[in-house]
Amino acid sequence: MGKKQFTAVFWTLFLAIPFTALALSLAAYLTENLGRIMADFNEFSMAYSAGSKGLIVEMAARWPEVAGMIIGQLVLMTILLFTWRSQKTENQHNA
Image (cartoon, rainbow, N blue to C red; front, side, top):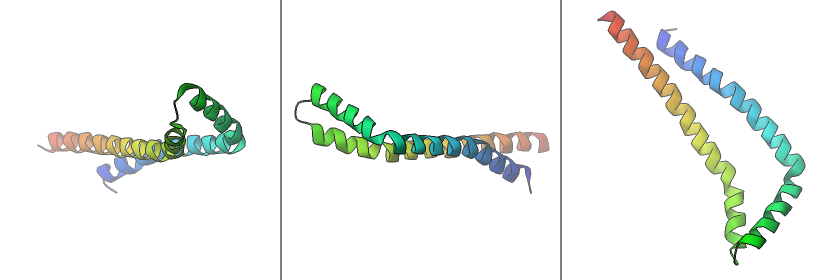
């Protein structure tokens, strides 16, 4: 396995394992406390919004998807950055 492939695999695992553990613990927390969280959120949205409860609840249902997409893109960009730097360093040493 070449250095670029090893670097890409290493950084993928280095980033994926802790984020997977974090996602599992957050999923467990949300599963246990979702009723209380949503009740508090509903009280907050009723107190501070004027009739836009539907929009706020819809956004609350979609934020994990958006957060997951953003985190996934950041992970991919980080991996690409590290492999690009590795390739640049290899090219300088070979020149």
